[in-house]
Image 1 (cartoon, rainbow, N blue to C red):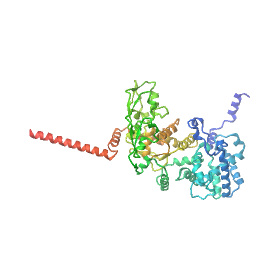
Image 2 (image 1 turned 45 degrees about the horizontal axis):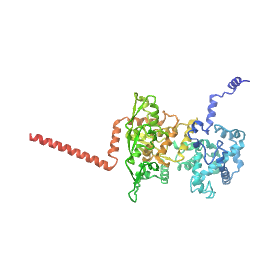
Image 3 (image 1 turned 30 degrees about the horizontal axis):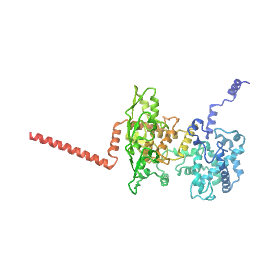
Image 4 (image 1 turned 45 degrees about the vertical axis):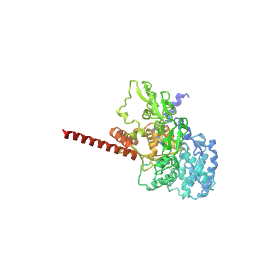
Length: 569
Protein backbone atom coordinates (compact mmCIF):
# COMPACT_ATOMS: atom_id res chain seq x y z
CA UNK A 1 0.00 0.00 0.00
CA UNK A 2 1.48 3.30 -1.07
CA UNK A 3 1.28 6.59 0.81
CA UNK A 4 -1.68 7.85 -1.26
CA UNK A 5 -3.74 4.79 -0.36
CA UNK A 6 -2.91 5.21 3.32
CA UNK A 7 -4.12 8.81 3.25
CA UNK A 8 -7.36 7.84 1.54
CA UNK A 9 -7.97 5.09 4.09
CA UNK A 10 -7.38 7.48 6.97
CA UNK A 11 -9.82 9.96 5.44
CA UNK A 12 -12.50 7.29 5.20
CA UNK A 13 -12.03 5.73 8.63
CA UNK A 14 -10.11 7.94 11.05
CA UNK A 15 -11.08 11.56 10.47
CA UNK A 16 -12.69 12.73 13.75
CA UNK A 17 -15.74 14.94 13.74
CA UNK A 18 -15.58 18.54 14.87
CA UNK A 19 -17.48 17.61 18.04
CA UNK A 20 -14.98 14.86 18.88
CA UNK A 21 -12.02 17.16 18.28
CA UNK A 22 -13.59 19.82 20.48
CA UNK A 23 -14.07 17.35 23.32
CA UNK A 24 -10.51 16.12 22.99
CA UNK A 25 -9.10 19.66 23.12
CA UNK A 26 -11.20 20.45 26.19
CA UNK A 27 -9.57 17.62 28.12
CA UNK A 28 -6.11 19.20 27.85
CA UNK A 29 -5.02 21.70 30.51
CA UNK A 30 -1.26 21.11 30.94
CA UNK A 31 0.96 21.84 27.95
CA UNK A 32 4.54 21.77 26.78
CA UNK A 33 5.48 25.35 25.92
CA UNK A 34 6.36 25.61 22.21
CA UNK A 35 9.75 26.78 21.04
CA UNK A 36 8.33 30.06 19.73
CA UNK A 37 7.81 31.10 23.35
CA UNK A 38 10.70 29.36 25.08
CA UNK A 39 13.38 30.81 22.80
CA UNK A 40 12.76 34.25 24.33
CA UNK A 41 13.58 32.99 27.85
CA UNK A 42 14.03 29.25 28.12
CA UNK A 43 14.88 29.26 31.84
CA UNK A 44 11.49 30.73 32.73
CA UNK A 45 9.76 27.44 31.89
CA UNK A 46 12.22 25.00 33.49
CA UNK A 47 11.88 24.15 37.23
CA UNK A 48 14.95 24.80 39.36
CA UNK A 49 14.18 22.84 42.52
CA UNK A 50 11.51 20.18 41.97
CA UNK A 51 9.51 18.50 39.21
CA UNK A 52 5.76 17.92 39.25
CA UNK A 53 4.19 15.77 36.55
CA UNK A 54 5.85 13.93 33.65
CA UNK A 55 7.42 16.71 31.56
CA UNK A 56 10.49 17.29 33.77
CA UNK A 57 10.50 14.01 35.66
CA UNK A 58 13.92 12.40 36.07
CA UNK A 59 16.00 15.45 35.10
CA UNK A 60 19.37 15.23 36.78
CA UNK A 61 19.29 18.56 38.63
CA UNK A 62 15.84 17.75 40.08
CA UNK A 63 16.56 14.21 41.33
CA UNK A 64 17.68 15.25 44.86
CA UNK A 65 14.08 16.26 45.68
CA UNK A 66 12.73 12.77 44.98
CA UNK A 67 13.74 11.50 48.43
CA UNK A 68 11.87 14.41 50.02
CA UNK A 69 8.76 13.49 48.02
CA UNK A 70 9.00 10.01 49.52
CA UNK A 71 9.32 11.44 53.04
CA UNK A 72 6.29 13.66 52.41
CA UNK A 73 4.29 10.59 51.34
CA UNK A 74 5.16 8.75 54.57
CA UNK A 75 4.16 11.71 56.74
CA UNK A 76 0.91 12.12 54.78
CA UNK A 77 -0.04 8.43 55.08
CA UNK A 78 0.73 8.37 58.79
CA UNK A 79 -1.38 11.46 59.46
CA UNK A 80 -4.45 10.51 57.40
CA UNK A 81 -4.37 6.82 58.42
CA UNK A 82 -4.82 5.54 54.85
CA UNK A 83 -2.79 2.83 53.16
CA UNK A 84 -0.87 3.50 49.98
CA UNK A 85 -2.84 0.73 48.30
CA UNK A 86 -6.21 2.37 48.92
CA UNK A 87 -4.96 5.73 47.60
CA UNK A 88 -3.49 4.03 44.55
CA UNK A 89 -6.79 2.29 43.79
CA UNK A 90 -8.77 5.54 44.00
CA UNK A 91 -6.48 7.33 41.56
CA UNK A 92 -6.20 4.31 39.28
CA UNK A 93 -9.93 4.64 38.58
CA UNK A 94 -9.36 8.07 37.03
CA UNK A 95 -5.95 7.32 35.46
CA UNK A 96 -7.08 7.99 31.88
CA UNK A 97 -8.71 11.28 32.86
CA UNK A 98 -5.49 12.34 34.56
CA UNK A 99 -3.45 11.38 31.48
CA UNK A 100 -5.82 13.32 29.22
CA UNK A 101 -5.00 16.49 31.14
CA UNK A 102 -1.56 16.48 29.49
CA UNK A 103 -1.31 17.59 25.88
CA UNK A 104 1.52 15.17 25.09
CA UNK A 105 3.17 12.17 26.74
CA UNK A 106 6.26 10.06 26.53
CA UNK A 107 5.43 6.45 25.79
CA UNK A 108 6.52 5.37 29.28
CA UNK A 109 3.55 7.15 30.88
CA UNK A 110 1.10 5.68 28.38
CA UNK A 111 2.34 2.10 28.71
CA UNK A 112 3.06 2.05 32.45
CA UNK A 113 -0.08 3.21 34.29
CA UNK A 114 1.27 2.04 37.63
CA UNK A 115 4.32 4.31 37.38
CA UNK A 116 2.15 7.23 36.26
CA UNK A 117 -0.18 6.88 39.29
CA UNK A 118 2.81 6.51 41.62
CA UNK A 119 4.22 9.79 40.30
CA UNK A 120 0.85 11.54 40.76
CA UNK A 121 0.60 10.36 44.39
CA UNK A 122 4.17 11.37 45.29
CA UNK A 123 3.82 14.80 43.68
CA UNK A 124 0.37 15.40 45.16
CA UNK A 125 1.42 14.44 48.70
CA UNK A 126 4.49 16.68 48.49
CA UNK A 127 2.40 19.68 47.36
CA UNK A 128 -0.12 19.19 50.17
CA UNK A 129 2.63 18.81 52.78
CA UNK A 130 4.40 21.91 51.44
CA UNK A 131 1.17 23.92 51.56
CA UNK A 132 0.44 22.69 55.07
CA UNK A 133 3.72 23.85 56.62
CA UNK A 134 3.91 27.14 54.67
CA UNK A 135 0.35 28.47 54.74
CA UNK A 136 0.56 29.41 58.43
CA UNK A 137 3.61 29.52 60.70
CA UNK A 138 1.39 28.48 63.65
CA UNK A 139 0.27 25.24 62.00
CA UNK A 140 1.42 22.26 64.10
CA UNK A 141 3.86 20.14 62.15
CA UNK A 142 5.41 16.71 62.56
CA UNK A 143 8.65 17.80 60.88
CA UNK A 144 11.83 18.76 62.72
CA UNK A 145 12.67 22.46 62.67
CA UNK A 146 15.96 21.61 60.95
CA UNK A 147 14.22 19.71 58.14
CA UNK A 148 15.84 20.95 54.89
CA UNK A 149 12.47 21.23 53.12
CA UNK A 150 9.59 21.35 55.61
CA UNK A 151 11.38 22.90 58.61
CA UNK A 152 12.31 26.52 59.29
CA UNK A 153 15.49 26.14 57.26
CA UNK A 154 13.52 24.93 54.26
CA UNK A 155 11.04 27.80 54.57
CA UNK A 156 13.91 30.27 54.54
CA UNK A 157 15.93 28.78 51.69
CA UNK A 158 13.93 26.42 49.46
CA UNK A 159 10.36 27.71 49.78
CA UNK A 160 10.71 30.55 47.26
CA UNK A 161 12.16 28.21 44.62
CA UNK A 162 9.42 25.62 45.16
CA UNK A 163 6.72 28.32 44.92
CA UNK A 164 8.29 29.47 41.66
CA UNK A 165 8.28 25.93 40.29
CA UNK A 166 4.64 25.44 41.32
CA UNK A 167 3.67 28.24 38.90
CA UNK A 168 5.25 26.73 35.78
CA UNK A 169 2.88 25.51 33.10
CA UNK A 170 4.94 22.42 32.29
CA UNK A 171 5.30 21.60 36.00
CA UNK A 172 1.65 20.97 36.95
CA UNK A 173 -0.43 18.02 38.08
CA UNK A 174 -4.23 17.90 37.66
CA UNK A 175 -6.18 19.45 40.53
CA UNK A 176 -8.17 16.22 40.76
CA UNK A 177 -5.15 14.54 42.38
CA UNK A 178 -5.01 17.16 45.14
CA UNK A 179 -8.79 16.97 45.64
CA UNK A 180 -8.70 13.20 46.13
CA UNK A 181 -5.80 13.43 48.57
CA UNK A 182 -7.12 16.33 50.67
CA UNK A 183 -10.45 14.54 51.08
CA UNK A 184 -8.58 11.68 52.72
CA UNK A 185 -6.59 14.06 54.88
CA UNK A 186 -9.59 16.05 56.18
CA UNK A 187 -12.43 13.59 56.75
CA UNK A 188 -12.19 10.72 54.29
CA UNK A 189 -15.58 11.62 52.81
CA UNK A 190 -15.32 11.55 49.02
CA UNK A 191 -18.78 13.11 48.65
CA UNK A 192 -17.71 16.43 50.17
CA UNK A 193 -16.20 19.03 47.87
CA UNK A 194 -13.20 20.75 49.42
CA UNK A 195 -12.00 22.55 46.29
CA UNK A 196 -12.52 26.08 47.67
CA UNK A 197 -10.64 25.23 50.85
CA UNK A 198 -7.77 23.88 48.76
CA UNK A 199 -7.85 26.96 46.50
CA UNK A 200 -7.60 29.31 49.48
CA UNK A 201 -4.68 27.37 50.95
CA UNK A 202 -2.85 27.56 47.61
CA UNK A 203 -3.50 31.30 47.21
CA UNK A 204 -2.56 32.07 50.81
CA UNK A 205 0.74 30.21 50.35
CA UNK A 206 1.67 31.70 46.97
CA UNK A 207 0.33 35.25 47.37
CA UNK A 208 0.34 35.76 51.14
CA UNK A 209 -3.41 36.36 51.38
CA UNK A 210 -6.66 34.81 50.21
CA UNK A 211 -9.93 36.55 49.42
CA UNK A 212 -13.00 35.40 47.51
CA UNK A 213 -13.76 32.03 45.96
CA UNK A 214 -12.31 31.37 42.53
CA UNK A 215 -14.35 28.28 41.55
CA UNK A 216 -13.14 24.95 40.22
CA UNK A 217 -9.67 25.05 38.74
CA UNK A 218 -7.52 22.83 36.57
CA UNK A 219 -4.21 23.01 38.46
CA UNK A 220 -2.20 25.26 40.79
CA UNK A 221 -1.29 27.74 38.02
CA UNK A 222 -4.97 28.05 37.11
CA UNK A 223 -5.86 28.75 40.76
CA UNK A 224 -3.25 31.52 40.84
CA UNK A 225 -4.41 32.98 37.53
CA UNK A 226 -8.08 33.07 38.52
CA UNK A 227 -7.14 34.81 41.74
CA UNK A 228 -5.11 37.58 40.08
CA UNK A 229 -7.83 38.31 37.50
CA UNK A 230 -10.84 38.29 39.83
CA UNK A 231 -13.40 41.00 39.30
CA UNK A 232 -12.58 43.90 41.65
CA UNK A 233 -14.48 43.82 44.94
CA UNK A 234 -14.10 46.65 47.42
CA UNK A 235 -16.07 45.02 50.24
CA UNK A 236 -13.46 42.47 51.21
CA UNK A 237 -12.06 44.15 54.32
CA UNK A 238 -10.17 41.04 55.37
CA UNK A 239 -8.20 41.14 52.14
CA UNK A 240 -7.36 44.80 52.71
CA UNK A 241 -6.11 44.07 56.23
CA UNK A 242 -3.98 41.17 55.01
CA UNK A 243 -2.51 43.28 52.22
CA UNK A 244 -1.69 46.04 54.71
CA UNK A 245 -0.07 43.45 56.97
CA UNK A 246 1.93 42.14 54.02
CA UNK A 247 3.08 45.67 53.15
CA UNK A 248 4.50 46.11 56.63
CA UNK A 249 7.06 43.39 55.90
CA UNK A 250 8.18 44.73 52.52
CA UNK A 251 11.65 46.22 52.33
CA UNK A 252 11.44 49.72 50.92
CA UNK A 253 13.91 51.84 49.04
CA UNK A 254 14.68 55.33 50.30
CA UNK A 255 12.38 56.84 47.69
CA UNK A 256 9.49 54.54 48.65
CA UNK A 257 10.01 55.16 52.40
CA UNK A 258 9.92 58.91 51.83
CA UNK A 259 6.50 58.62 50.26
CA UNK A 260 5.22 56.80 53.37
CA UNK A 261 6.15 59.85 55.45
CA UNK A 262 9.61 58.77 56.63
CA UNK A 263 12.27 61.46 56.35
CA UNK A 264 16.02 60.94 56.07
CA UNK A 265 18.73 63.13 57.55
CA UNK A 266 22.45 62.79 57.09
CA UNK A 267 24.76 63.37 60.07
CA UNK A 268 26.50 66.01 58.02
CA UNK A 269 26.19 67.46 54.57
CA UNK A 270 27.66 65.06 52.07
CA UNK A 271 28.60 65.98 48.54
CA UNK A 272 29.72 63.31 46.13
CA UNK A 273 32.24 64.46 43.57
CA UNK A 274 31.08 62.57 40.51
CA UNK A 275 33.48 62.48 37.59
CA UNK A 276 32.49 61.11 34.23
CA UNK A 277 34.33 57.79 34.72
CA UNK A 278 32.89 57.25 38.24
CA UNK A 279 29.37 57.90 37.11
CA UNK A 280 28.87 54.34 35.82
CA UNK A 281 29.58 52.86 39.26
CA UNK A 282 26.60 54.43 41.03
CA UNK A 283 24.29 51.59 42.11
CA UNK A 284 21.25 53.81 42.49
CA UNK A 285 19.97 56.48 40.18
CA UNK A 286 20.70 60.10 41.01
CA UNK A 287 16.98 60.71 41.34
CA UNK A 288 16.65 58.05 44.08
CA UNK A 289 19.81 59.08 45.99
CA UNK A 290 18.69 62.68 45.99
CA UNK A 291 15.73 61.75 48.16
CA UNK A 292 18.08 60.47 50.90
CA UNK A 293 19.58 63.94 51.31
CA UNK A 294 22.75 63.28 49.31
CA UNK A 295 23.72 66.09 46.97
CA UNK A 296 25.63 65.63 43.75
CA UNK A 297 28.23 67.93 42.30
CA UNK A 298 30.24 67.25 39.21
CA UNK A 299 33.99 67.81 39.55
CA UNK A 300 33.75 70.03 36.53
CA UNK A 301 31.10 71.04 34.09
CA UNK A 302 30.77 68.21 31.63
CA UNK A 303 29.26 68.65 28.20
CA UNK A 304 28.63 65.53 26.17
CA UNK A 305 28.88 66.13 22.47
CA UNK A 306 26.22 63.82 21.01
CA UNK A 307 26.87 63.05 17.38
CA UNK A 308 24.92 60.65 15.24
CA UNK A 309 27.34 57.76 15.71
CA UNK A 310 27.52 58.25 19.49
CA UNK A 311 23.78 58.04 19.96
CA UNK A 312 23.74 54.29 20.62
CA UNK A 313 26.15 54.65 23.54
CA UNK A 314 23.89 56.71 25.79
CA UNK A 315 23.21 54.40 28.75
CA UNK A 316 21.36 56.81 31.00
CA UNK A 317 18.31 58.92 30.39
CA UNK A 318 18.75 62.66 29.97
CA UNK A 319 16.49 63.29 32.94
CA UNK A 320 18.59 61.22 35.36
CA UNK A 321 21.93 62.63 34.17
CA UNK A 322 20.52 66.12 34.46
CA UNK A 323 20.08 65.48 38.20
CA UNK A 324 23.88 65.23 38.48
CA UNK A 325 24.20 68.62 36.71
CA UNK A 326 25.65 67.08 33.59
CA UNK A 327 24.69 69.13 30.59
CA UNK A 328 24.07 67.89 27.07
CA UNK A 329 24.88 69.67 23.87
CA UNK A 330 24.28 68.44 20.39
CA UNK A 331 27.03 68.77 17.82
CA UNK A 332 24.84 71.08 15.74
CA UNK A 333 23.62 68.27 13.60
CA UNK A 334 20.17 66.92 12.95
CA UNK A 335 19.30 63.47 11.75
CA UNK A 336 18.23 63.45 8.13
CA UNK A 337 15.89 60.51 7.75
CA UNK A 338 15.33 59.12 4.29
CA UNK A 339 12.27 57.11 3.38
CA UNK A 340 14.06 53.76 3.57
CA UNK A 341 15.69 54.59 6.94
CA UNK A 342 12.47 55.77 8.55
CA UNK A 343 11.56 52.38 9.99
CA UNK A 344 15.01 51.99 11.52
CA UNK A 345 14.75 55.35 13.28
CA UNK A 346 11.27 54.53 14.62
CA UNK A 347 12.57 51.23 15.96
CA UNK A 348 15.56 53.02 17.50
CA UNK A 349 13.33 55.47 19.33
CA UNK A 350 10.56 53.23 20.65
CA UNK A 351 12.39 49.99 21.52
CA UNK A 352 14.70 49.29 24.44
CA UNK A 353 17.23 46.97 22.81
CA UNK A 354 20.74 46.52 24.14
CA UNK A 355 22.36 48.65 21.44
CA UNK A 356 19.52 51.07 20.91
CA UNK A 357 18.82 54.41 22.50
CA UNK A 358 16.64 53.46 25.50
CA UNK A 359 14.58 56.63 25.66
CA UNK A 360 11.60 57.98 23.79
CA UNK A 361 11.91 60.73 21.20
CA UNK A 362 10.68 63.22 23.80
CA UNK A 363 13.63 62.47 26.10
CA UNK A 364 16.12 62.44 23.23
CA UNK A 365 14.85 65.82 22.08
CA UNK A 366 15.75 67.25 25.50
CA UNK A 367 19.41 66.47 24.79
CA UNK A 368 19.35 68.87 21.85
CA UNK A 369 19.06 66.26 19.09
CA UNK A 370 16.46 67.11 16.48
CA UNK A 371 14.67 64.66 14.20
CA UNK A 372 13.82 65.57 10.63
CA UNK A 373 12.51 63.56 7.73
CA UNK A 374 14.07 64.31 4.38
CA UNK A 375 10.83 64.74 2.47
CA UNK A 376 8.02 62.73 3.93
CA UNK A 377 6.21 62.73 7.26
CA UNK A 378 4.46 59.91 9.07
CA UNK A 379 0.76 60.03 8.41
CA UNK A 380 -1.42 58.47 11.08
CA UNK A 381 -5.01 57.69 10.26
CA UNK A 382 -7.70 58.59 12.75
CA UNK A 383 -8.35 54.89 13.35
CA UNK A 384 -4.69 54.16 14.15
CA UNK A 385 -4.39 57.32 16.23
CA UNK A 386 -6.44 55.67 18.99
CA UNK A 387 -3.81 52.95 19.34
CA UNK A 388 -0.72 55.15 19.66
CA UNK A 389 1.25 54.22 22.77
CA UNK A 390 1.97 56.86 25.36
CA UNK A 391 4.45 56.33 28.17
CA UNK A 392 3.76 57.21 31.79
CA UNK A 393 5.90 60.33 31.46
CA UNK A 394 3.98 61.48 28.39
CA UNK A 395 0.67 60.74 30.08
CA UNK A 396 1.77 62.73 33.12
CA UNK A 397 2.76 65.68 30.95
CA UNK A 398 -0.69 65.48 29.37
CA UNK A 399 -2.29 65.92 32.78
CA UNK A 400 -2.96 62.29 33.74
CA UNK A 401 -2.11 61.23 37.30
CA UNK A 402 -1.51 57.70 38.58
CA UNK A 403 -3.04 56.08 41.66
CA UNK A 404 -3.01 52.62 43.17
CA UNK A 405 -6.22 50.60 42.76
CA UNK A 406 -8.10 49.41 45.82
CA UNK A 407 -7.49 45.75 44.96
CA UNK A 408 -4.63 43.74 43.47
CA UNK A 409 -6.71 42.24 40.69
CA UNK A 410 -5.14 42.70 37.26
CA UNK A 411 -8.62 43.63 36.02
CA UNK A 412 -8.83 46.55 38.43
CA UNK A 413 -7.63 49.08 35.85
CA UNK A 414 -9.72 52.20 35.35
CA UNK A 415 -9.47 55.73 34.01
CA UNK A 416 -11.73 58.49 35.23
CA UNK A 417 -11.36 62.29 35.28
CA UNK A 418 -7.68 62.27 34.48
CA UNK A 419 -6.75 59.56 37.01
CA UNK A 420 -5.41 56.18 35.87
CA UNK A 421 -5.74 53.53 38.58
CA UNK A 422 -3.57 50.40 38.42
CA UNK A 423 -3.19 47.44 40.81
CA UNK A 424 -0.10 47.23 42.99
CA UNK A 425 2.66 45.06 41.52
CA UNK A 426 5.53 43.61 43.53
CA UNK A 427 8.35 43.10 41.02
CA UNK A 428 11.08 40.67 42.05
CA UNK A 429 13.26 37.95 40.55
CA UNK A 430 10.26 35.60 40.07
CA UNK A 431 7.89 38.10 38.45
CA UNK A 432 9.04 37.46 34.89
CA UNK A 433 8.75 33.68 35.27
CA UNK A 434 5.25 33.98 36.74
CA UNK A 435 3.92 36.26 34.00
CA UNK A 436 5.49 34.24 31.17
CA UNK A 437 3.84 31.03 32.36
CA UNK A 438 0.47 32.73 32.81
CA UNK A 439 0.78 34.14 29.29
CA UNK A 440 1.72 30.72 27.87
CA UNK A 441 -1.32 29.15 29.55
CA UNK A 442 -3.67 31.76 28.11
CA UNK A 443 -2.19 31.32 24.64
CA UNK A 444 -2.35 27.52 24.67
CA UNK A 445 -5.52 26.69 26.59
CA UNK A 446 -8.65 26.63 24.42
CA UNK A 447 -11.53 25.95 26.80
CA UNK A 448 -13.05 29.36 27.49
CA UNK A 449 -9.87 31.03 28.72
CA UNK A 450 -9.84 34.74 27.98
CA UNK A 451 -6.67 36.78 27.63
CA UNK A 452 -6.88 38.94 30.78
CA UNK A 453 -3.23 38.55 31.80
CA UNK A 454 -2.02 39.16 28.25
CA UNK A 455 -4.15 42.31 28.00
CA UNK A 456 -2.74 43.63 31.27
CA UNK A 457 0.88 42.92 30.34
CA UNK A 458 0.47 44.61 26.95
CA UNK A 459 -1.21 47.59 28.62
CA UNK A 460 1.63 48.00 31.14
CA UNK A 461 4.15 47.66 28.32
CA UNK A 462 2.57 50.62 26.52
CA UNK A 463 3.02 52.96 29.49
CA UNK A 464 6.52 51.77 30.48
CA UNK A 465 9.22 52.71 28.00
CA UNK A 466 12.07 53.60 30.31
CA UNK A 467 13.27 53.87 33.91
CA UNK A 468 11.65 57.30 34.15
CA UNK A 469 8.20 55.74 33.60
CA UNK A 470 8.93 53.10 36.26
CA UNK A 471 9.97 55.83 38.72
CA UNK A 472 6.61 57.56 38.20
CA UNK A 473 4.73 54.34 38.97
CA UNK A 474 6.91 53.68 42.03
CA UNK A 475 6.18 57.15 43.40
CA UNK A 476 2.47 56.46 42.89
CA UNK A 477 2.70 53.27 44.97
CA UNK A 478 1.81 51.05 42.00
CA UNK A 479 5.15 49.25 41.60
CA UNK A 480 7.26 47.91 44.47
CA UNK A 481 10.68 47.28 42.96
CA UNK A 482 12.93 44.51 44.31
CA UNK A 483 15.14 44.40 41.20
CA UNK A 484 18.48 46.13 40.93
CA UNK A 485 17.19 49.24 39.17
CA UNK A 486 14.19 50.92 37.61
CA UNK A 487 15.69 50.24 34.19
CA UNK A 488 15.57 46.49 34.94
CA UNK A 489 11.82 46.77 35.59
CA UNK A 490 11.29 48.60 32.31
CA UNK A 491 13.30 45.97 30.44
CA UNK A 492 11.30 43.19 32.13
CA UNK A 493 7.88 44.46 31.05
CA UNK A 494 9.11 45.36 27.57
CA UNK A 495 10.43 41.81 27.11
CA UNK A 496 7.19 40.22 28.41
CA UNK A 497 5.14 41.76 25.63
CA UNK A 498 7.47 40.71 22.81
CA UNK A 499 5.70 38.85 20.00
CA UNK A 500 2.40 38.75 21.90
CA UNK A 501 -0.63 39.71 19.79
CA UNK A 502 -2.52 42.76 21.06
CA UNK A 503 -6.18 42.24 21.93
CA UNK A 504 -7.89 45.33 20.54
CA UNK A 505 -11.29 44.08 21.66
CA UNK A 506 -10.33 43.62 25.32
CA UNK A 507 -11.60 45.56 28.32
CA UNK A 508 -8.36 47.54 28.67
CA UNK A 509 -8.67 48.80 25.12
CA UNK A 510 -11.53 51.01 26.28
CA UNK A 511 -9.31 52.41 29.02
CA UNK A 512 -6.63 53.16 26.42
CA UNK A 513 -9.10 54.98 24.16
CA UNK A 514 -10.39 57.03 27.09
CA UNK A 515 -6.84 58.13 27.97
CA UNK A 516 -6.02 59.05 24.37
CA UNK A 517 -9.25 61.04 24.10
CA UNK A 518 -8.28 62.86 27.29
CA UNK A 519 -4.79 63.61 25.95
CA UNK A 520 -6.23 65.23 22.81
CA UNK A 521 -7.64 68.12 24.86
CA UNK A 522 -4.85 70.73 24.86
CA UNK A 523 -6.04 72.62 27.94
CA UNK A 524 -5.52 69.48 30.02
CA UNK A 525 -1.84 69.50 29.05
CA UNK A 526 -1.56 73.24 29.76
CA UNK A 527 -3.12 72.79 33.17
CA UNK A 528 -0.75 69.92 34.00
CA UNK A 529 2.24 71.92 32.83
CA UNK A 530 1.16 74.87 35.01
CA UNK A 531 0.79 72.65 38.08
CA UNK A 532 4.09 70.86 37.53
CA UNK A 533 5.96 74.11 36.92
CA UNK A 534 4.50 76.42 39.55
CA UNK A 535 2.83 74.22 42.15
CA UNK A 536 5.34 71.42 42.72
CA UNK A 537 6.50 72.90 46.04
CA UNK A 538 5.56 75.78 48.36
CA UNK A 539 8.46 78.00 47.24
CA UNK A 540 7.37 77.84 43.62
CA UNK A 541 3.85 78.80 44.70
CA UNK A 542 5.18 81.71 46.77
CA UNK A 543 7.23 82.90 43.80
CA UNK A 544 4.19 82.73 41.53
CA UNK A 545 1.99 84.63 44.00
CA UNK A 546 4.73 87.25 44.48
CA UNK A 547 5.07 87.63 40.72
CA UNK A 548 1.32 88.15 40.32
CA UNK A 549 1.34 90.63 43.20
CA UNK A 550 4.17 92.65 41.66
CA UNK A 551 2.46 92.51 38.28
CA UNK A 552 -0.77 93.80 39.84
CA UNK A 553 1.11 96.61 41.60
CA UNK A 554 2.77 97.54 38.30
CA UNK A 555 -0.61 97.76 36.55
CA UNK A 556 -2.07 99.85 39.39
CA UNK A 557 0.94 102.17 39.29
CA UNK A 558 0.62 102.52 35.53
CA UNK A 559 -3.09 103.31 35.79
CA UNK A 560 -2.40 105.84 38.55
CA UNK A 561 0.35 107.52 36.51
CA UNK A 562 -1.82 107.70 33.38
CA UNK A 563 -4.71 109.07 35.47
CA UNK A 564 -2.53 111.83 36.91
CA UNK A 565 -1.37 112.77 33.42
CA UNK A 566 -4.92 113.27 32.16
CA UNK A 567 -5.88 115.21 35.32
CA UNK A 568 -3.11 117.75 34.62
CA UNK A 569 -4.44 118.27 31.13
